[in-house]
Image 1: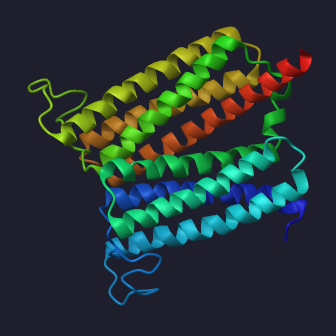
Image 2 (image 1 turned 120 degrees about the vertical axis):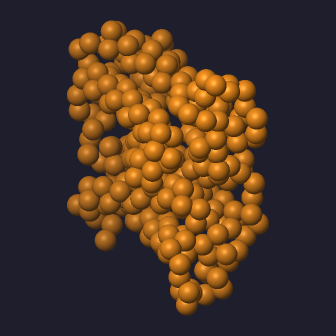
Length: 305
């Protein structure tokens, strides 16, 4: 059950399950299914399977089921990885983070159902889950030895790119929070057209301010990723890890921007909105990978000194 031969398929399965958790959370919010099970948790309307099941209940109940199953799969992966490749420095802390933040995410979700938290607290839910996803994603990359391919094992990231990457990750995480706040504050269609309602630029409601803040953050995120991408490609032209990794991040932020714009233009089309959540999930996963490489660089430089 915890054999080393199970690691690869377990890693892929756990990553997919965590992806479905992210998309499921977005689906619940986008469809207004947060109250699909009333104020009952872990039961739904006081029952394991309620008699009356409208679409909102099905969506919320399905999200809870996927989240519960993902916890089991992630625990299986973590135990198997800890037992077989725990000697790799990152495995144990990533295992603790992945399970810990998955549990926190579940508790925040439960609190939202039971005590009806405000939008600003609820917006933390997606970001917490994103940290758990990224940890599972990194464990899977390590299992497949991606961290040792394309010259990654000999990569030394210099201070300018290290600083840019940290800034990029922090700003992106803030952008993630504002995006989640847009959903929870029901501000997806606030503040008029895209990119700006030129006929009336002044925000009038709280939802307008939330939407405007997210648009501003999205522009800042795109700009810092563009700057970091240009710096990485210019200064590390012969390293495939940097070239492929930062190019992938730049492509993902372009797709994120396009789906964000289309979400407004289409009146929050559900498919577009789910792709929007998918792209930011894997974009942040890539940033987590860059941070892991940065921490390895710092250890390597410290060892030399």
